[in-house]
Length: 340
Image (cartoon, rainbow, N blue to C red; front, side, top):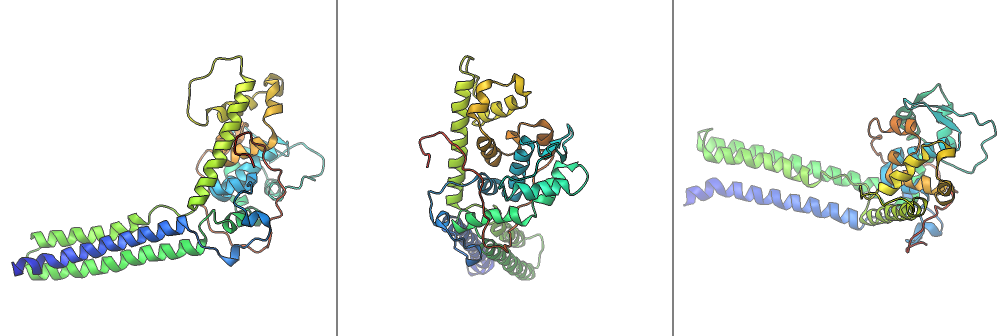
């Protein structure tokens, strides 16, 4: 009995420590999502920073949904809709034919337009990659961090270090346990050695798996994003019900069917579009749809194809240098019971 306890006891104790570490890592990550910390680096003055009822602008909703890449996609969709830029069928972008000066107070669209104008026609994916690094684009997230809709980069870094630190320490302890077990058993093909090797693999994999999910939005941020998506879908359903009221209802094709139907209708020449669509689905609606839906909500097939070629750039933690975004994009028009 003592021999069995001395052989398998350390293995049981080791596995118990592994499970405890995995549970603790999971608990800390959950706490970071459900109760994100405030960071002075991301402080923003104004009533919108402290109000949980303040409506997010389209670019802010875009960052919440998909980071800097989604912000650029939203800006490109708006610029193309206003003819500041044009796209080819293959998804390359160049300046449009508008000759008037840019006077719209759009602190994100204008810098993105400068990226398109700063060189020869380029693929939409390349424009997105370059524009995602603009200070005006990453500064959009400041209000999101101030309202704790996103997990701050310092918290993400600490949890990454904790996860890999726990995996490294448990791995070293597992290697030592495997060596001791092999020496004591004097047979590499024995059951204790196989169990020690399996415990080592579990020790390395469990903490990493417990912290594998990406930390970006907080729990409140997820709820805010879902509310925005629901508002866009409700507005699209309301518009579709009036524009195509004389047509039989199409079979349900997912929650975004009405948004996609509107985007597809806007691809047609202006003369062949439903007349009511321009009245009921405005510029702000289109921007918000791209913000929360992504490139699929962009009516232009060339730009959509250019952006859909691959996923957007990885979301990186921004470092801010300015104190305010100066956002002045019009508030999106929503129709629903929870309008504020």
